[in-house]
Length: 380
Image 1 (tube, rainbow, N blue to C red):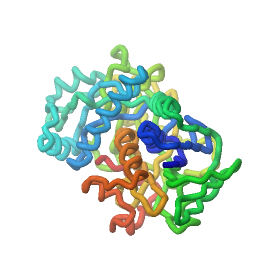
Image 2: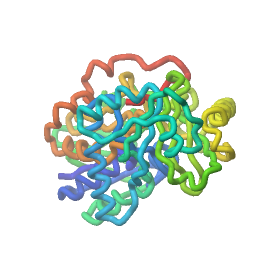
Image 3: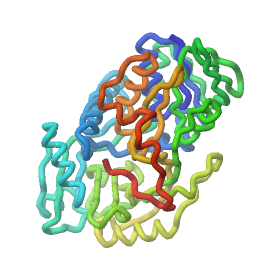
């Protein structure tokens, strides 16, 4: 089978790897290069966690962890580091319930235990806290490179900085026109992030996607090497004040508010616009609740997130077109599992029933995206 994978980020790279290793003729295109900083997959690290509200997401994360470890073993490239994850506040009870249902090890903590695990944090007596040891971080660029390495080893043709311009589905497959050539294939897998609708709208497959910007800042601590700290989910002051954090080796500890600014994404912008008031508000919050991070912010950066109306991914097939879209800010932790399911769709296999929540025709996609400039990122 001839397959063109368009977009080689968190969804596209593992899809290409899986299809190539299954013996298919795979061509990979990415308009900006592999990796790149235009989309959401080319930055340093992303948080990994098994913790989710839905049991189905816990299982999906478990499958991804298996595949991350397998990829790491086969390539010798670090794509996952196990540091644990600390949960505080409103996320503790629902995620504990999902862990109990799925038999996932975890433990509840008192304030003294929290201070031992995360000494930069001001102890909060009487506040819910839970630790899960399999949380940690994913190394984004090494992951993309590892997937591409295995795909190329099995014959995939990888073409960075080649833009797919038009899709022309027909009875026997799909014709892809790029800025260089014409490619005939049996299936096209579109995993182009915020740029997906450039290809899908002209063929009647426009998706309700809303890209935006998330902003994070780096801080350094007073208690030794903060690259040993667990990842963090902090939900103690409501959705607008929800925070997350993870290590940034060589840079410090990365922290941000779990909100997305829908007003600042421009497809062809080279530099992402920063929000100084948000940076200042985050710094004040860190000084108050994480006093051990005494230095910073000394670097602030932005990344891209793409929303859907119901906060779920889009993983489906229509004719010869397979779509992986709507990263929701947490696709990377599921990347290898999503890649395997997208490869299944390319082979016209039926996905498990719990993947129906990601289909094109689901009622949730008919909803409307928030009209607010800044909306909370899903913590599911």
